[in-house]
Amino acid sequence: MKSGTVVGRVWATKRIDRLPAGALLEIELDGRAKERVIAFDPLGSGDGERVLVTFGRAATNWFPEGKAVVDALIVGSLDENGS
Image (cartoon, rainbow, N blue to C red; front, side, top):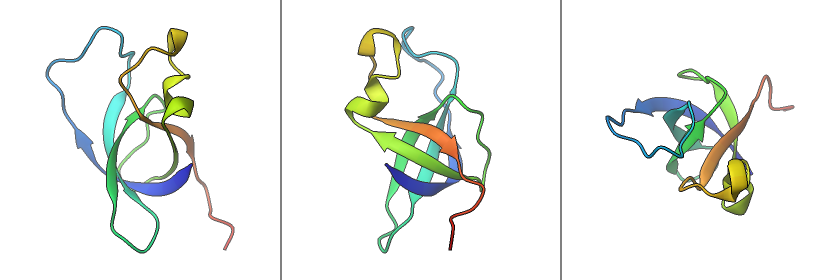
């Protein structure tokens, strides 16, 4: 898992039926490099919000029967980072 900040939304006019209600968000991951990913958000996160993102099988297994085309999933909203 990695933490990051929501920096934008990705609008898709067409989506596959297996993808449940939720948004596609652009996340700038924490770290030295300015890496960005698109993650599926079932939580309703907003711009500027710090989130926790999981990847790969952990993201896919959240969906029914583990069948999804999503490999990045927002699993939490971070209130503070403990620094």
